[in-house]
Amino acid sequence: MVDFKIHKAISTARTYTGTPYRYGGTTKRGMDCSGLLCVSYQSAGLQLPRTSDAQSKMGRQVRLGELKPGDLVFFAAKKGRRKITHVGMVTVIKNSKDIQFIHSSSKLGVVENNLLSSYYKSIFVKARRPF
Image (cartoon, rainbow, N blue to C red; front, side):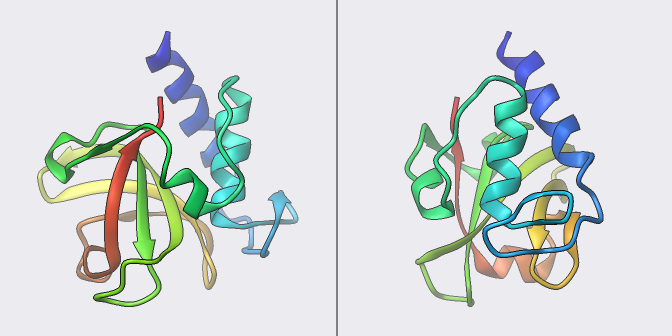
């Protein structure tokens, strides 16, 4: 049952691809990172807190090698920082060097990127399995 709900959350998140970033946004007119995950999980009947910081305290922590689709990945504003400022959701694990996640980027809007790219890997803080 959880796998079906995770698939639903991912497919809902992908319907927002290209939606511009808007702080506090939760619609196709504009979406922020934590809002994207709230709306996506809500479509699957699962509730997440509204902020990335609060989301970072849900469920259990997982290591990069344990990631599964639906896990949440958290980031800091700059390399070396630990304060959570951004969140995304793992969508596909292609191989050990390509883990895709969907998020609302302040510059690009809702997009999927490789978590293990040099930029995202440098600001990655932790991952959690919320359900």
